[in-house]
Image (tube, rainbow, N blue to C red; front, side):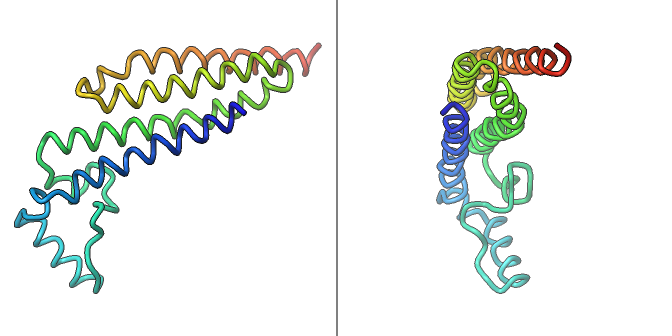
Amino acid sequence: AAAGFIGLTGMFIGGSVMGVRGQCFKSDAYLKKKEVQAMAEEHKKAFGCEMNDMGYPDMGNGRYSAQLEYEPWVRFNNAQRAHYNMVESAPGVIGSLLTSGLAAPKLAAGLGFGYAVGRLLYARGYTSSKGADGRVVGAISSALCSLSLYGVAMVYGVRAAFF
């Protein structure tokens, strides 16, 4: 159940990026910029179709994002970072969750749920007006849970291998 909750958490955080992406790249202020209109023409000429209206393939530091005003640029990049941080940390946590769950299922499940809740707090804080400073509570809580899972996996792994 905890692994599924972690997966859903990642999907939720990723989905929230889509909302911010739409607000940024579909805004009238963005679309009316001469530079954006020139990129749209260049895109149509190069590919024979309209430019993607969600800013793809830009991930926050490309040509499309360079045309955003400062506030939407920061908001978009903070949302992207919250999602990337989840994507970066989840594989090790899920692996440790599965291996520690063989020896200590209730402990592993609790730590897995704690990690997922921490990641939600992290994303919510990162995308708040506090930006990166808002992620601290989620960062600490998810880090404590993930480090605990790593420790449990190592202890039980060593016990199984050598004792």
